[in-house]
Length: 402
Ligand SMILES: [Zn+2]
Image (cartoon, rainbow, N blue to C red; front, side):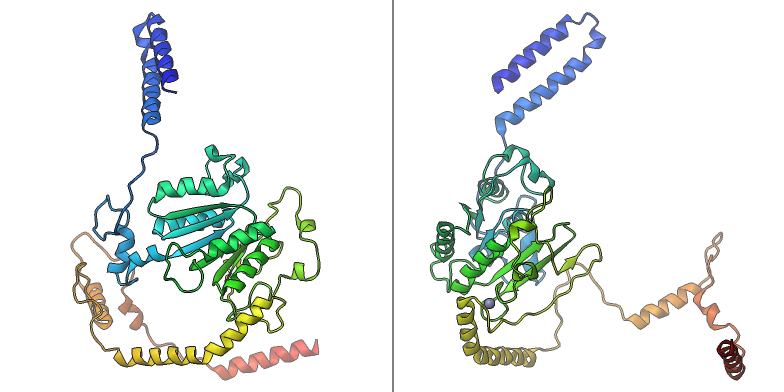
């Protein structure tokens, strides 16, 4: 590419020389500058930052974590850096999954496992994340490329496969079970699974895996017209699993493929109860697991949960009581680096009244009457309510007789 750009520069130069009138050569010079800029960009490519060993709270423009570590200073999180110990699996790198992956990457999550069988197409450019030069790449590889540029500290794993096939499901299960990232972790090898898929079959596969592994996961869906969607938190045994309350369209025995219509994103759930962006309505509900769920692993988790629930409730109660008794009335922040002062509301009122009475400097007049003038209005003359009622009664009678 460098050679070609040099040739273009030479051609531009000879074109410039061929123009007799020097005052007409300026546009050629402008073009030459643009070609030189392209050559420069081609030489250096995208600039990648180096890995950061420990997250620093230093407030400098060059620290990629300074804004995030501020959450710790503000008391919102206790230890922000512990985010590096967490693994999240994202199934489906589409409109929802890619954005979730990018946000977690920017937050500095420890490890992301990305699953998708699809390739990037130009038709995907309506959404955030993928770029035209990634067309033809698998979605998971393209995602790893983009995400590792944004934050090289995140451990990224790309799984280009279909989790609904027998082989795909096995790989999905073993990748979730793999604990090499954090060998002493309890349960599976990941902390959370995000289902960002576009079909019922894949949701059921995620449900099956998470029920078997006792893995907490979140399900998401967007409606065909893209104006509503839902999010569901699923804790095996504790809340309803995806099979406990299947969507109506599937329960009635309709083949999913017949629901896909020409020209519409095939994906999306035909009906979705949840957030409606047109009405800005976000209903929430809790769903207990179905004791007659068709998923055997779900029933096993339900039994386990009933077994541990009394002890868990007692521990939660004891913790709440301990916290309540240790709470003392002390200032929340001892230092005051922002110079924030707390003013008594009643004092604020007094100041206002005073200022509205105060004479204004010469040349200024009050456009609105001061609040006090309303209080000095003569008291309303008492109205005879009896007369009003009498009138009303007469009007009603007239209506009834008509
Ligand atoms: Zn269930």
